[in-house]
Amino acid sequence: MTHTDHRGRRADLAAIITASAVTVGVFVLDPDVTAGRELPGIAVTAVAAVLLAADRFARVTVVAIGVLTAVTLAWTSSPVALVPMLAVALYRLVRRSDDRSVIRFGSIAAIVVAGFGALAGSEPFWFEWVTYSAVLLLPVAAADARRSNLRRRADALERQVSERLQAERLRIAYDLHDIVAHSLSAITVQSGIAAHRFDRDPATAHTALVEINDAGRRSLDELRSLLGLLRSDESLPLRPAPSATATLNDIVATATHSTQVETVEVVEDGHYPAGVAESTVVTVHRIVHECLVNVARHAGDVPTRVRLRHTDDGVHVTVSNQAPTAPRVAAPGTGIGLVAVRERAELLGGTLHAGPADHGGFTVRAFVPYQIPGGWTA
Image (cartoon, rainbow, N blue to C red):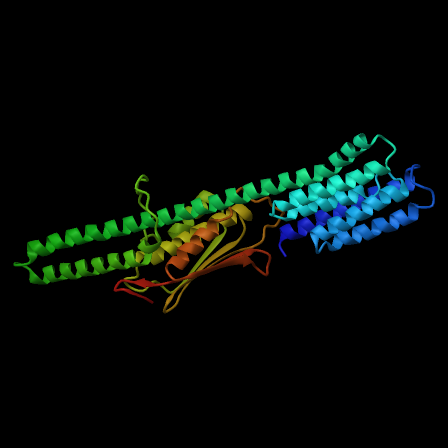
C-alpha cells in the first residue's frame, strides 16, 4: 500500500469519526429528539459507522445509510439524525469513482432522503426539502470538484512525463549527432591522408584505411543502438553532448560543483574494453550525473558512493547515499529523472533499479552492456 493510500484511509477514518461524533452529540443534546429514543439512535449511528468503515459496496452503502437516515429522521424527530453519515457516504461514493453516473445516483439519493426529512420536519415542506437537499448535495458537488482536480493534475503530470521523456530522446539524438559528427570528421581526415600517401607510403595509407573502417563501423553501431527509438524535431538546433572521453572523476566533479554535494567517494573496478562504443560511456555518465543531482535534491550534502564495476559483458553502476542527519524537505523536482535514465539504459539493453537502502539512504543500481563496434553487444 502506498503512502497516498494510507493518508486516504486516515482521512476517511477521521471523517467517519467526526460525522459519528456530530450525530451522537445531537441525539444526546438536542431537546427535539423524542425522549427514550436517544440510545436507539446512537445504536443506529454505530451501525452506519460500521457500514462506512467497511464500504465494500459503495452504492449499497449509500442506499443503506440513506434508508437509516430517513427512518431516524421520522422516528426520533431529530433535525439531523444520520445526515452527517450520509454526507460522508455520498462524498466517498463520488470521489472514488470515475463513472459519471455516480453523480446522478448520489444526487437522486440525496434528494429522496431530503424529501423524507422534509416530511418529518416541522417547517413548511418546500423549505425543509430545499434545506436538506442543499446540505446533502454539497458533498456530491465537492467530491466531483475534487475528482476533477485530481484528474487534471494526473493529466498534467502525464504530459510532463511525456515531455521529459521526449526531451531525453532529443538529448540522445544530440549525443548521436556529436558521436557521428566526430566519426565522420575522423573518416574525412584519414581518407585525405590515405589518398595523399597511397602511392608514396602504402603502410601509412593502409593504417588510415583501417582507421576509416573502424570509425565507420563505430558510427553504424551507434546508429543501430540509438536511432530506432529517437524522435526528431528539426526545429530544435543540435548542440554538442558531453564528451565520452571525459573520465568518471570529471563527471562527478561537474555534478558536485553544480549541486554542492562534496562528500562523494568514487571507485572504479576495471576499465572499459578497447573500442567500446561511446553510447555506453555517455549513458553511464548520464546515470551518475542524474543520481548525484537527486542526492542533492532529496538528501543534501550526505556521504555518497559512486562505484563502477566492469565485467566481461558490461559495466555495473551503483550510486548510494546515506540518509540525511536531519529531516529535510526535498527541493522541487519533476520526479521522473530516473525514469529518463532508466529508458536510456534500456535503450542499450541494460537495466536500472532504484529504491531505499537498508541503512536509510537511497541506492541506484544499473547495468549497461558494452556496445562494441562491429554489430554486436558484449
